Image (cartoon, rainbow, N blue to C red; front, top):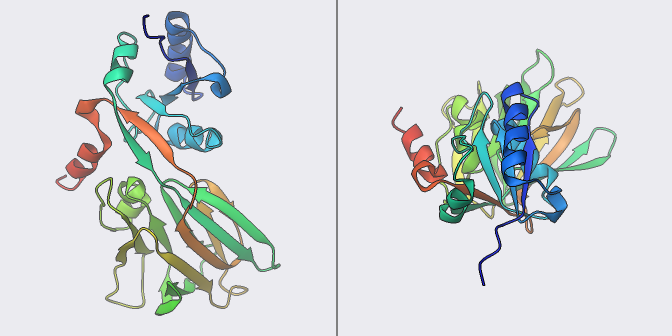
Length: 256
């Protein structure tokens, strides 16, 4: 008995090239609803990939991305032909997102999930003052900076890299804690911490120095405290062509 091909669901960003590719790929391979698919094919850039992973997190269906946007670090090259063979030969990576728990100044609690990073950022021209505890132990009494972020290995080449944080190879059981434009402490440039760590941020004088918190693209403003830890249940599976694997891209970034 021949093996049944996987049921594919094609989703695309609003980029004109992605929309055109969606029509062509649908004609060639068919297209089922994401909730009925064995595999989701995301057509676009990295931002759309993040959106797709979040949108379908309840099913944890594997995602194979093809680059048709502006940035494609998480994407494979686009090609119309031989897609089923590429999928069969693809290697997979399981990404564990971060969970953000926030309490705002009104005492309300908010939750978010981040594949790349959780970032705290000043909302005004006043520098943020933030206390940092790691596993319940105070490590930074007062960080004076534009903000601070916690990045996963997959996100270590994104905002974290632009903030001069270290790159983590995929599969590293660690996260990166990186200050953003720090003024005090003068010599502290961040830390690499075990993936199972709990990091607590307390915003000091939040009425005068308001701070927002974001998990990828979900934002909470006027925060009082933020807890970041690895999500205990969620996991995302990405598929990559062997010659364009994510761990090789992360390795290459360290020599640019």
